[in-house]
Length: 236
Length: 236
Image (cartoon, rainbow over all chains, first blue to last red; front, side, top):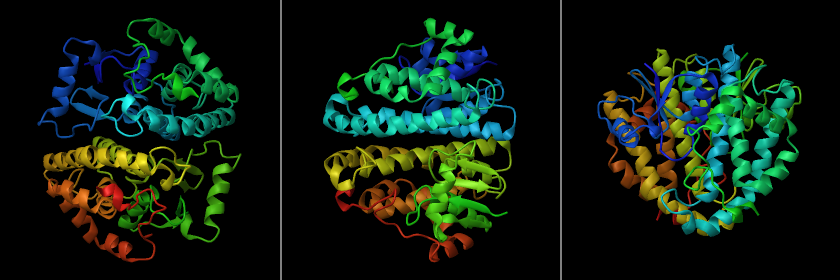
């Protein structure tokens, strides 16, 4: 049975990290968000009282009887099966560690436009967002990107883990693509000092299956309902 | 060689999830925060240019030549060795999934008092914190606690995973203890509807080794430099 990815319709969000892995591997998966009645199916699944181990939130993966939540854990689970997580146990743990750090960065990126409450509109927390964005642009974004630059430098390969593509590479590609969309000015400045991160991004974008995916209608365009948004006033 | 836990001195923070696991298992570990010059050792280690895979932040674990960052990953790594993660592969993944959700909750808990910037004082982001606290008390705290209550109910045991103590139980204990410290009024209301979570907390508190640990000077008291803080105005 093919994997089922359950996530919101209309956004990339945290589901996109998983989609990129499936797409790069050419794996069979059903993207529930792109099926008719997909949102109802997802919500029914999450609320199913017979589910012994329900996820707290989406995205979650259905693999036969298994239901697995947390994007980074989904990748830790499918990574070795898709040959996207390094061969040794140490490599797999490290790939997961990098991914967990990317997940932290994604949460901070989201909270820039929602520093008060996810349940409120951006417009209702704009003064707070303007303050948080300053910290994000000038401290957090550079700190994360310098860490990625450092580990690329020490790995001496155009990949985060060992000598070949991993899901962590795909996710870092995604973060760079998003930063350039959401914070064109700030990210240009930060990425100027991270040439290896830029090269990794470009390498992933040229990956044959990823290039096809990005050009397809399976790739949801960036938009302002997403985890990652573009509000020019937050770019300084 | 004994495990080394590297973390900040003077706070519980994310290091406490790892400490509780070591303590419950009666495992040998060196808590670098409680050694002379520990902070310098930690910072030297993180900045060591010879470290091929440096952690992004503390806590991190040193196990011989291995250096592992991300609290949830440290637990995923040591959990099976300490017999605190369930026996099957599925149980171990589920324990990790629960822990990742606890990690998300801990981040939200921190951001209540620091919604704008970690680099600023609480006093410099108090209006924002007051707004964020309302959402946290009335929406997020109940949502997380109801999820834990649900999975305890479905597990039909006083544990989150299978029939015995796991590091996820220890971490949920820690979150309840902290909520009662930081949000005495709001947590009383929320926990009233989560009797299984309360029972789990009490069970862990009575665990022989944990009880000894909590009464020892190895347990740093809650304080307002910590990830988890008490500001009565945020409790509504």
